[in-house]
Image: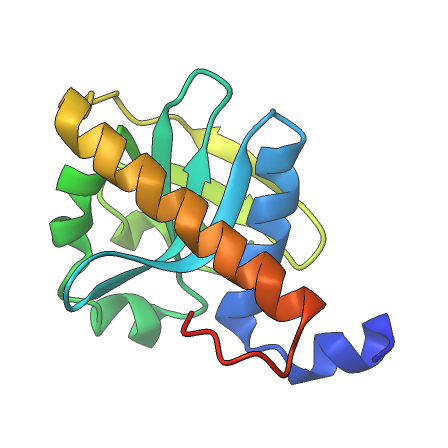
Length: 152
């Protein structure tokens, strides 16, 4: 599939996630999308930094998308820093002031507001790092062998 066709099949939130992941990579972070830190919750982007820091980024493509999300506060206990990623047209005054802010598009992003750090407990960091690694490995395997029966 060529890049243009791929762009047409991605939803607005997925396009934001793509730009966020590209931006974070330029700062030494590796990322996975749609990781489940705990049962019933799935973060849009989880980033693992060069010093082991864990960031969660929730991508919101519209006011309605943000207002319908009543679970985002559950993610705060699963990261060192929490961010919203939105496009330039998003009404950022809706977003909580104490969370991070990334303005993004399908190609890149920029951290506009850095949130305070709330360090994870070592045991939780270990569990999340292992989940991150397993999630990334399953995705890589599925990309190499699409016919394999791998639950992502």
